[in-house]
Image (cartoon, rainbow, N blue to C red; front, side, top):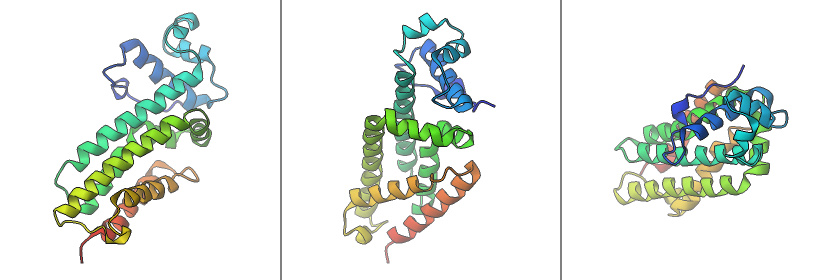
Length: 205
């Protein structure tokens, strides 16, 4: 069964309705058949257009996959920023931020029998997008850590005051939960536990 993501999930204002339909159809095809077995014909058919029309929007399936990776990071950064802008206790803030970072697309990926293959495809075809996206997320968490420390609500002593290094370690630990690919419920439980571990390390005194 295809991993379903709501059409409104693909909500980049710069993305026109036709591209939204293509990205939604592509993600469901990748989740159902895997990256290697998905053909442009599958995506065209699922999005209700001819293959020729599909090529007017994207050069190939790698181009589509890269667009999905770019959307994931744009959405993750926006959602994490929204959570961390709220005045929440450390553990709750981190737990909600980790949950928001997962997003509906990654949630669906965890449910796909081809999740491992899709993560490998992301590394192979979208490494530059992933690297830039991870750096953006690290910057968001580091900024939050610095604000919490300045307000006396957190201590960065565990990282010798280096908020960026601490944020990068948090992201590395969070990504470590994805290998091997867990079930969605197991991933959420582990992410919540990880939030508790970091919150304890950040708590002053």
